[in-house]
Amino acid sequence: MPSASGGAGHEQCGRGDSDGRGHRHGDQEHADAVGYEQEQQRNDDRARSADQHRRERAEQRRDRAGAKLAERRRGGIILVGAMGAENGVPCMANDGAAKAYVHSLGEALHYEFKPLGVYVTVLAAGFTNTAVLEKFGLDPKTMPMKPMSVEQCVSEGLSGLLKNRSRIVPGRLNRILNALVPASLARKMEADMLGTALAGKSAVASARGEA
Image (cartoon, rainbow, N blue to C red):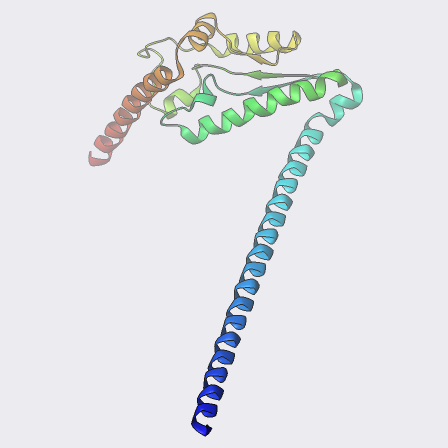
């Protein structure tokens, strides 16, 4: 009897320890789950706060840019982008992405300022004969397509603004290419042209350095 009673007591004690460990394990899992949910909530709150901050900064920039014009309820803004920027521009990826932002910003502002009597136009220019060409090692005389003059680019941009166009691509040939050439082909053409020009510029610089 004593041995049976002791055995039973030992068995009961064993079950108690097992149940205790189970409860503790379950409590830990619950605590971990609650902690994970709380951390996710904090991350979501931070993301919403950052997004709200970005929106507020964008609105502040918009307000500063057009506040005076909006007060007068007349005037115009031209934002200079680049033809095909939304498709990506090889060898100048950062510049292209920045211009794509300008396009998105300008076309949105076009409609936001329209009721206020303020015109906003995006000038999506193609290759234009400026100092930027030299930066990329391009010679206007040897380019596959002659770059547009600054005067023509400015003239067509102002004309588009006076007509309150949301976007203008200056140059008839540019407009045809922009409308008909697939984005993948345009990227390849730009990659070939800019890549070759930059490689030539680098080779010339190396030769001068060695001399």
